[in-house]
Length: 286
Image 1 (cartoon, rainbow, N blue to C red):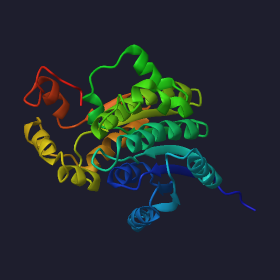
Image 2: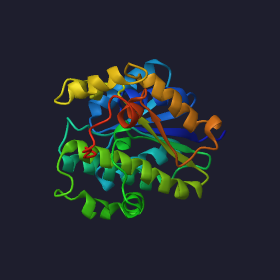
Image 3: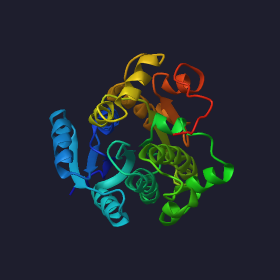
Image 4: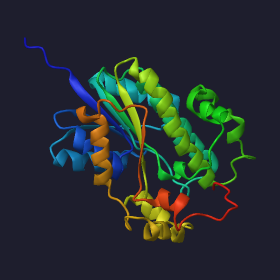
């Protein structure tokens, strides 16, 4: 009897437009494990990808639960060898409280990196979707950077800098989480490298997705529209543009890139620090 070749698994966490866009670029001939907190979102995305010729299995995952992430790892490895992880799940400042943002976007990302870092295949690669928001946070101390990067996952949310008296609004929580994502990935790149694998972050600006539309129509909508108008490019980005960068980082052309963060925001951050979007001298970092 002929032995079957083990499946090559690409795990996509977060069934939104950005995760799908990267998956389409890197998953030809591979098996996509598409996971989301809402099964209906995963099923809808799976149908789109299946109709485009991809092989897809769906799963439910809550990235803020270790048991749930471990179950996803077990399900993925039961199908084959995990050669790619695309982590695009998260909540935005207009969608959740500071506590929830820290639990999902910061703790959840650290948890995914830890658990999948135990099984990622040699030659494999991961991409975490962070945000331009992390680049608008004022510089942290060396000790704070190290704490966000290396504190054991289950102790992360107990850090003094993340307590309610220090993080008082959702935007600040989001900025800290996204800065933390890029720092965590830098540290995890060392551990992943021991398995012969790579991992990087992408920090997109305003990308046209349902989440972005929530922001554009939410309480901070005017500010986001101003960001677009005053940026060098003068428009929002598309998921396919993020997909192009994701494909570079996960493919052979990106084989020398790991532990890095790629800011792609149409020049919004440049305008924030050095252009017309610059805040007053009394910057708060929020």
